[in-house]
Amino acid sequence: MNLNRPRILLPILLCLPLAAGPLEWGVNIHSGGKDPETLAAKLAERKLTCVRMDLWGNDPKYLARFRVAGEFLVKKGIKIEAVIYSKFSAGQARHQDLEADLVEVERTAYEGTRPQIERSRDLLRDFELQNEISLYRGIKAAGSTGERAADFDTPCGRLQAAVLRGMSKAVRDVGKEAATPLRIILGTTDRSFALLDFFLEQGVVFDVVGYHIYPWENHKPLDADPWFGPGGPLGQLARFDRPIRLNEFNAGEIYSGRPSRPTLPDYANAADDPVTEAGFRSLDKHLKELLGQTRANLEAVLFYEIWDEPHKGPPENRFGLYFDEALTLPKVSLLLAASYAGGSLSPAEKGELEKRQLGNIER
Image (cartoon, rainbow, N blue to C red; front, side, top):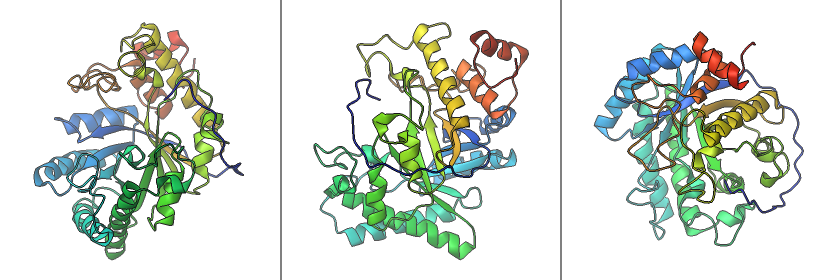
């Protein structure tokens, strides 16, 4: 998220309040870790009732681990949304196969996706088509802003449209044949809302909009921030007339310092550190605003992510709600998440929130 954000003009939207049920609260857990039974129990205790997982469903070993974790989660009443991948996903063999026959691409994506859905549909209903496609290399025309569908009419954009047509058709077909109501999630990031317009024009089918955002404490509410256009990011997403899932969400302050924002103080990832505490205030501020907004049909907020990954470099090493994979060292951000979800908090944990005047708790 750029602090020195240029002004951008987008079409004025008529955004009417939409009826929506209670927010679902959840977290990204990737594959579920080494002890998915404990993970599921901890999530249920905190009333984090949905998770976002990676599904590499054509890898037998990975699929087996996914299913073990999924079964523990489902037993605890926790819903799963799975990110499904293809040979054309970022980092995979054909990610930049820009000269490929798009008919063959669509068929290959269909054939690679269908068995993944068949092997997991008994555990979940929500399937997301790849991750952060808006950030793929070459997806947006050089020098464009991403505010027009035509900005994504590039070789990479057309390649990915063919991929997503095949993937979405595979999800649809499996759902119809099994008489199972499966949902397709298609996501975007930053101001790349017109990416979804482009994919719609290209015949990609989806039921739910996913969105990743990491707002800072000094940023305006997500239903008003003019940097994203009229109505903020929620207003821009609402025009697709679909449920919205903020399926990666955390404080922007995590990016402060080296290497992401080297001119700003480092985020120390420790209670009482000024930047870390600003991140807690940022979370609290924006979560309160999300509870009160009526601009969009916001269905869920999923924090990124369940635990820190110290083997990665900053800032990717410090997004966790817990410091440790054993789930014994919760952060204040986990306490905030639990307070909004209505989950369990010990007296000492409530005290941590109360002394900061944070959280959705009675005082």
